Image (tube, rainbow, N blue to C red):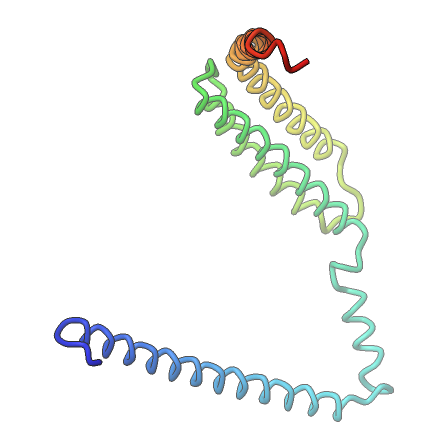
Length: 194
């Protein structure tokens, strides 16, 4: 059975696309393999040229100077993460309240200002990362920002509850009435089944 006209052209086009895709895949795999082989060759050359007596102390100094080995660097990363997590939670709560058409007042404007303030606090935290001890003022700024973000999130949540609360209570009342009516109807409709 042969296909005629447009169907045959579509099958031919599909065949050509499959061949082109396979050719691109093969070329990509070949290039990736070549890159891996070159990098492995470079690493082998470096390992062969490594002299522990000459290069060992320099390698230890380089490793010790890395920020990952510094405890204050890790603490700064944790604090920065806390700041952005709090700001994101406040922004999501306000956005959800806006989508739910809850009264939000100036909360969207405050979240934009909160984000700008978080950017400056983040810069302060990054700058203080190089020093061994962070100043109390920077820590106080961070704590104040976290408290503001939590206040905004709580306000948005309360606004959402003011909108969703009556809806859930009225739904719960309607469900209770319907379930009791259905049970009563079933007990009246089938008196002999007991």
